Amino acid sequence: MLSNVRTVSLSLFVFVLLIVPLLFCKQSSDIITKEIAEAQSQSKSQNKKLILVFGADWCPDCRALDSIFSDLEVRKVLDSNFILHKVDVGRFDKNLEINEFYGSPIENGIPALVVLDPSGEILTSTKGGEFSSASKMTKEQVLEYLYRL
Image 1: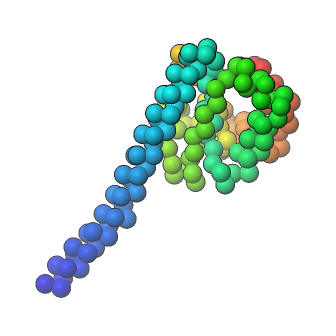
Image 2: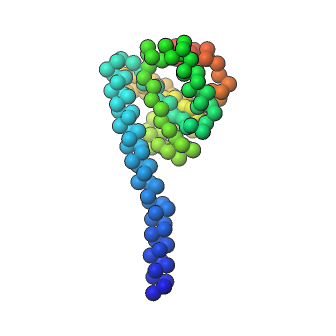
Image 3: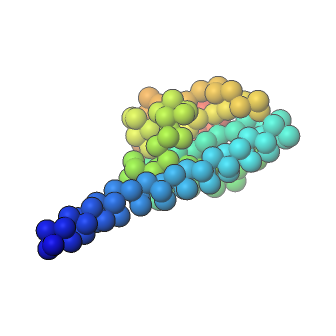
């Protein structure tokens, strides 16, 4: 009898440990997918390109890129031509199916950008890690990248 209780307890523990987090991850990615769809709709209606920024709040280079994106000159270029949408990848354990859908841009580091045209087609991606050292980039380098789009 005690052995059956242990087996049931162990099974329940494994279920909670492995399955429950998957349910929350799926829910999180569904929300992100809806948000991306809304951003794509906004991109299309405003005839602007959509930039998906894959990153995380713990990442110094992601914070550096945020800071560059906040610069007045860069902000003007972004506001005139682009819709920005962030995708949180956590510690490379969140929204991975979205990452895969867009060609795994985070494989060489974050932040990583995927740029879509107003119809939703991928124009380019920084999957080579071009922005993974954003803390060493200047606003001029970021502007040069944006102007090429």
